[in-house]
Length: 111
Length: 117
Image 1 (cartoon, helix red, strand yellow):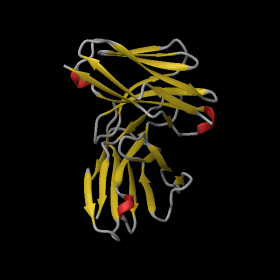
Image 2 (spheres, each protein chain N blue to C red):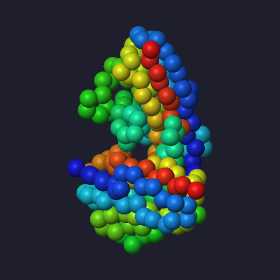
Image 3 (cartoon, each protein chain N blue to C red):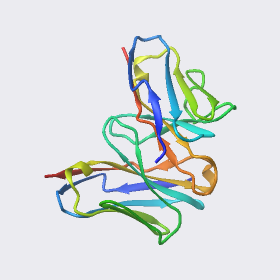
């Protein structure tokens, strides 16, 4: 059974204080690791897909990296508008079309 | 990125009535769509997977007679909550998967807040 664990559950940062969110996973044959951002009362917004260890992707202040056991979402010099819940999900060989989600990290960036 | 819409964005209904939620992929064809439910401060819970033209596959514990799913076309799936009760109040989110292949991605709709009085 695929499993995803995200840490920390909540993270408070000052504006400009860089940090990283962790997503640890176990999966039978990784077919993709996905990062989403979710604002309160809204659906998840797609950020990145990573497929193989060593792969990195960037978008503005966000950078996602992947190893065989975990993924990190690095946030550089965050701004208050980066405050949201960040969700990590994996799709494995045995899961068919399904994504397995972690519990999310709630990020709060204070000005 | 691809766009998925949901309608309505919120609905309030009386106990015992049925509510239909529409999910559309606006700029791509989705052979597979998913319906999720989310409780406050919790992660997404998959309810069912629907493939165009065939019956939906429901997750364990989800009542198929209560949550009717129809995926009539490659761009539209509907979720009908039949005889809704207050415990069905939740945030319902649909997702559409871009067509097959190794690099497909799931895009989510904005969600529908259902409140059953």
